[in-house]
Length: 123
Image: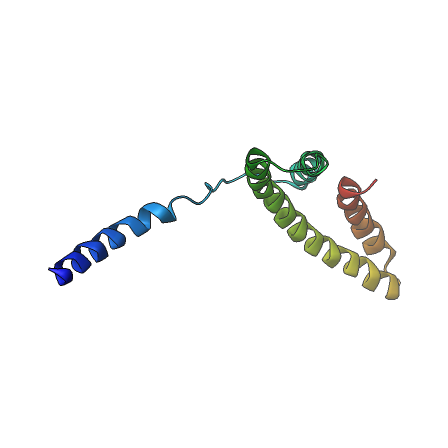
């Protein structure tokens, strides 16, 4: 009889574990960051939102849920910014090498490309 009770209890626990696992907060995709302009806008806006929540003092469970949601948008923005900054570094390297090699046309052309992108991030 004891073995039967243990078998039933084990079966119930095995079936219940997936239910308990679903108690995690939901996962969201966040706002997209398909362009550098969109990434910068989302990064600024969602940082303001995070700052406002953190400035409240004690955080409620609703606040924590809101932070959880907005971090997805921030992660998307940061990923796009990282990609864009890698590309920007390559363009700046082209400007650097062209300046070393006395190539004014490349310096002007790639320098303009560099400034156009970098000004979208910092003015």
